[in-house]
Length: 215
Image (cartoon, rainbow, N blue to C red; front, top):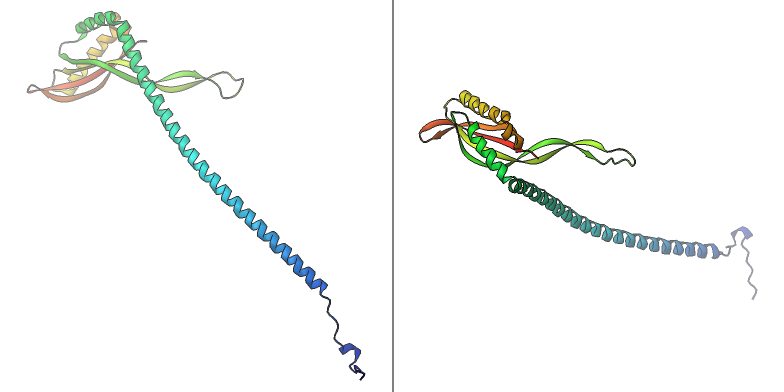
């Protein structure tokens, strides 16, 4: 039996070409694999970066602890150095000190009574030369605060009135400044405080004066 297709040619179903579809599917698969691989690589990089960041934070914390310890050691070293300097001055000049403190007894004006003599320190600004951060440039001047050993006097001005007490302490300071023997070792006497105080049922003015020890 012979089969005859009587449909017009334009209605005859065309055979589909699967090659473009296969190519598109293959390209999509390649792109998917590339995207998945790229995404996995990105996540791996992020994870590694987070680990490195965490390690850096730990290292930074350790460095900060070390810096704090170094600063504390530097402060301790400075305090020890100041104390050693003061002790060295006392030990090297103890004979001179005894003579100068003997001289001090004659410098105390009437109306002043010394209660205590002890060691102290005085902080003041000084100008020092520091290296220039610019290579080849000369050193530059810089003002820093330094501590210097001092001797401190605590005593009483035998007056209930502040004005008179201040005047008596001022006389005491002038006598220390003007005495040639005393002022060779102790310089720049200064009144740090003066306050009304009761002593053995009497109202007096308690004062504190210190003198820097000459280097």
